[in-house]
Amino acid sequence: MTDTILETDGLTREFSGFIAVDSVALRVRQGTIHALIGPNGAGKTTCFNLLTAFMPPTRGKIMFKGRDITGMKPAMVARLGLVRSFQISAVFPHLTALENVRLALQRARGASFDFWRSEETLRVYDDRARQLLVDVGLEEFETTIVTNLSYGRKRALEIATTLALDPEMMLLDEPTAGMAHSDVDRIVQLIARIRKGRTILMVEHNLSVVEGLCDTITVLTRGRVLAEGDYATVSKNPEVIAAYLGSADA
Amino acid sequence: MFGFSRAQTIAFLVMVALIVVCPFILYPVFLMRVLCIALFACAFNLMIGYVGLLSFGHAAFFGMGSYVAAWTIKFWHVDASIAIVLGGATGAFLGLCLGYLAIRRSGIYFAMITLALAQMVYFFCLEAPFTGGEDGIQQVPRGKLFGFIDLSNDMTMYCLVASVFLGGFLLIHRIIHSPFGQVLKGIRENEPRATSLGYRTDDYKLIAFVLSSMLAGVAGGTKALVFGIATLTDVHYATSGEVVLTTLLGGLGTVFGPAMGALVIVTMENYLAQFGAWVTVTQGVIFIVCVLAFRRGIVGEIGGRLKINL
Image (cartoon, rainbow over all chains, first blue to last red; front, side, top):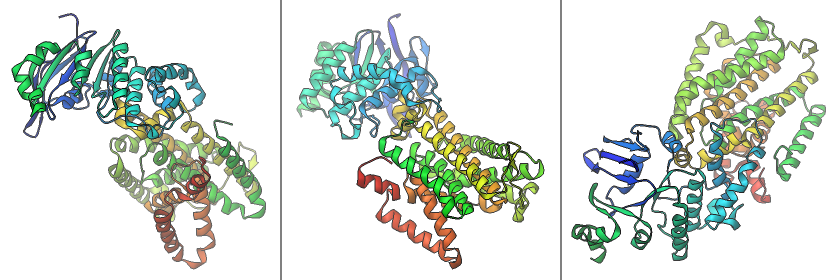
């Protein structure tokens, strides 16, 4: 299929006998929002770690834009345009919000080992960084040291930082986890806005978010793909109800 | 000025004023020792304060810089400036070799690897013929600067040492406030995130390590010229330990802390020298008090009270 951007084949990861991810064949189509859902311990985050090369797979292959990226270094994968966020908020706590975003923007300079140049060189990125902060509703916190921001705002900042790389594909690990309701709406709107020209793979527990946003859903349980399809199909699958939704009723 | 904040500009001007005035009041050789140790501590602080890596082997760079500067000026009769540059180059080269092996680990492992590698350098210096073994390289002439400025006068030498220190200090300041320095801070704050943004963090850490060891080499080379001697003490692990103590006492990760720490430590060593082993005991006590009571160090504590970044 030509419109597949990310594809895995027999992706497996074992931790001394325990199989966290078991021959997962994932196929993400270009321009879609694809959700990865499943109960705790289903292997969603491990999957993310494998896809972004933070962890080497035990077996299997990962293809990104038709290129085999299995075994690449994580920084290289990020440079190819496959950028992830983290489940625990991944910000640079003792820098300002603006500096956080700018750190992603300045990556565009390539290997920036220029220790002899002044910080002023980075001013050219300030406008773009401010725009990204406005996009996630953090404009008033530009000069705030990030450690002082609320959890929801840190997550928003993290998305702004990821967006700053303008990646072709974003992997969002529970972007709305631990957020207040109003923040969730803002993030959902943000994701809906940024999806243009991008592919998004997200792990998400909040099913109303998944329903509203995602085109395709893959359900994982115990490291295996249980079902795949759009929300309507997946939510009617009896196995899924038993394994995932059912557990919520219990 | 140079990206200094206002408080830092004032502190910097005070420091420069002290550097200018002090040799007229105090013994210049003592002050030169302070400045050499201060530069050494600033170099060390670049690693611990801005990359978050505790190197326990910085004496290797300081000591080798000292040996190379002493040797080249004594036997090759090179210019004083060249000797110092060669000291720095030695530090940088050694930093590249040691750092290449060490930066793959962090925390206690990084500290232990640097310590182990530095001990190898120590034993190399103990056995290698050119270092003079236990005797060290003695009676090193200060030589001439740029071929015509005679450095045997303490005041002239002081001017050179002060310039080297200020040059190193400003270079470190520039490194911290460069685009490169921003990435370093990102790595210190959250390395996996820096990686996920596409930075090859090991490369950044290695370059920072090389810069730090280069400046340590410069400090060692300058020290060799001042005292006309390069000995095993300079590469001994106790020197690595002392620079940790100096930086901690002054204030880890502060701009002026290492210099302040050097002033206090060298003053103690100098004026308490008559009490012999009590210097070490006093240093130990101060270290404990510092860690227990004011962990941010002297400058860090002052900055914290006044709510400014020094």
